[in-house]
Length: 114
Length: 112
Image (cartoon, rainbow over all chains, first blue to last red; front, side):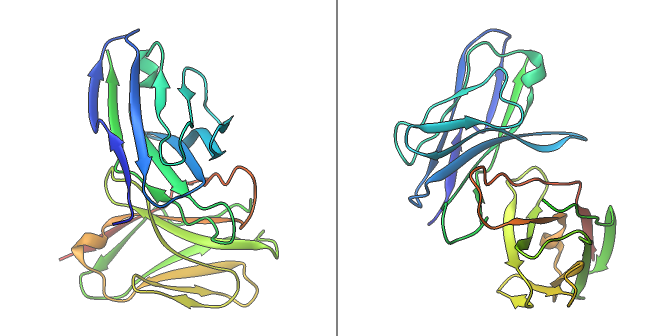
């Protein structure tokens, strides 16, 4: 089954404790992206990657890091989480050519930073 | 990307067709109309997209007016599981960022 998986689905952590949210897709997509969703602000892109070893900032990259060492994985790293990073996070993936903007989204990770 | 306008909320009776409008009066010739939906706090789900012709798939139909300034997403037989926020997104089909810009969408509530 074609899917995007994220782990963990729920996470409560404390300020400053480094964490990683994993994202994996099984569709051989070149493009992968991270969004965060906050009430009243909609979905905002954090980082994206056009292919292996190619990453770039989205609209709200501050406080986040990503890496793309393999095509299927795109982890989101919070080196020193702060309460303002409490949010619902989604990973998405798609092809980059010929197939438009049909993006597949993961189920989401709800992060709470206290 | 062209700006879109959608009603904030709509109700539909279960089993009836749900018709969700979207206005995109500034759309340009190479911009597509995409529809996604998000069921409460789940990841957004692609529904359908089109350029100028009407489109149909197993989930829905997309009707685009001849001048392309508006479109309607039709769920032919709405069920309770179709209750979700529906997003109309307009943009070109290529581009390096491929970011999807989600507006506020339409909250569709299917009533029993």
